[in-house]
Image (cartoon, rainbow over all chains, first blue to last red; front, side):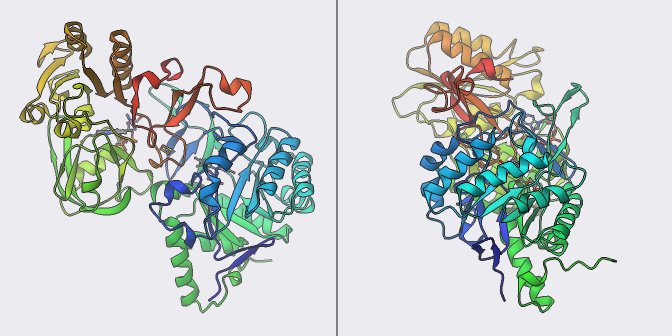
Length: 304
Length: 273
Ligand SMILES: Cc1cc2nc3c(=O)[nH]c(=O)nc-3n(C[C@H](O)[C@H](O)[C@H](O)COP(=O)(O)OP(=O)(O)OC[C@H]3O[C@@H](n4cnc5c(N)ncnc54)[C@H](O)[C@@H]3O)c2cc1C
Ligand SMILES: Cc1cc2nc3c(=O)[nH]c(=O)nc-3n(C[C@H](O)[C@H](O)[C@H](O)COP(=O)(O)O)c2cc1C
Ligand code: FES
């Protein structure tokens, strides 16, 4: 039975990875599960400089999901390399670095630094964080700037590039195409949805930031539609995510067109989710007589 | 840190407002240090997915217990659960209290709400007995007074309505005690943020060391999501950061990992909510 998939020139032993920002830098979960069983480990978004992040409260629970406005707190490239890279580089599975910047040049500079580091599995360009004023979704909701970011990073590195798209657009197709044309090796669909919750006693937003990004099982059907729409227009592989809790959810994303999947919010309440998804995927393939996991991708049957 | 599905041994009302939950978990129980917490997934909850953090109260053989108040959907569901039913637990988590050494500082404990539960293990494992100041709004808010007395500790109760102990705030008898003497004394506190802030200020005024267990909203409980952060002093802010990120010389640290227990003098109260 083949579970391995290809993201650009990167081979994953199975299609199940974690979503950036929901798994720290990997090391935090090492006591609870064997990271070497995963398809890849994806780290929290990193820019060139350290970032303090937003004031608290930063998250709020909502029905079947949560809001977050962390504000991309992080140690910066140097801090990351010093503190977390020694652990990550020893893993047997690829480490994918989620990067962002406030300008096109900064994206390119961060890409250059990680290219020079050696041993990085892939770069995921976060052009879709809804919780920061500059950078992030500014690039992911403007086709021209999206192209500039991807092209600038493409020029600097041969590492596989994954462009993480924003769901906050009328149609995802032009963004998916723009990323592909600019040289992205894969797409990640999707980041969180801009959203809000209010405490009715205090009449204040539940997040200090006012609004945040909605994630978890409540976004799954909308995310699946986005993957399906993107898959119709691009040839590059798609990493599907948004509310995955079990193998059935992952298979749905794959049938919609995803080559691989990422588990996000579910890690917070069930750190074993990724391993359960991998086991469930094997079981599904056995039951349905599938020899290759890639047979699932795009196998949804829709009326023409 | 381990993740286990555990069985409820007992789950009973402890006072008018608190319940006592005991779970069996032979692998986790021996690892627990004073001030650490358990992150509990209430398995019967289907659309509120996140775990809930609770301080560990007592450890006995292969079990541990928590004292909890019903304040929302999670705790209300736990309150209806019965012996034999299951919960998922990740524990022990967090950086706890520094247990005083024999012949070391005399511990003065300050507690409000579930803070008494959170400091029981500290009192039990401290070779130095001390004083515990416990406060609440009413009599029913005062937890585990007897348990602390049974350990041979001097328990000083205050309630805001005077229904039990002295009338007033928990900080009043603490200040009186520190006026008597500060020598060789160290404060440990756990309770509502307002109380912790007051204790932090008292520690500063009297120049005594203090460890505070901070209560922040949590999500993952293991350090990955960056929900639970509080502002902590750093030499010059995060190094190499842009200027506005270094202002004030502090950075956000995680209550679930670097905390919940922090040294009072590290916390930048002006920035907290
Ligand atoms: C380190 C730590 C240790 C804790 N130890 C204990 C303990 O020993 N005993 C105990 O009874 N409680 C403790 N708490 C608080 C406990 O986690 C919350 O009461 C619980 O999460 C509420 O869950 P719920 O689903 O019932 O309420 P929800 O429906 O989630 O919320 C109901 C109300 O409770 C408030 N709430 C939610 N989380 C917290 C929190 N962290 N602190 C204060 N209020 C909160 C919400 O704002 C809301 O108003 C601790 C919290 C932390 C961070
Ligand atoms: C607390 C939190 C932090 C996140 N941080 C990042 C981040 O740094 N970079 C990024 O590209 N996506 C980030 N995300 C988005 C996730 O990677 C993922 O796209 C999204 O959560 C949808 O998946 P889920 O529903 O399974 O969580 C974050 C999500 C959460 C909940
Ligand atoms: S609760 Fe997630 S980092 Fe502390």
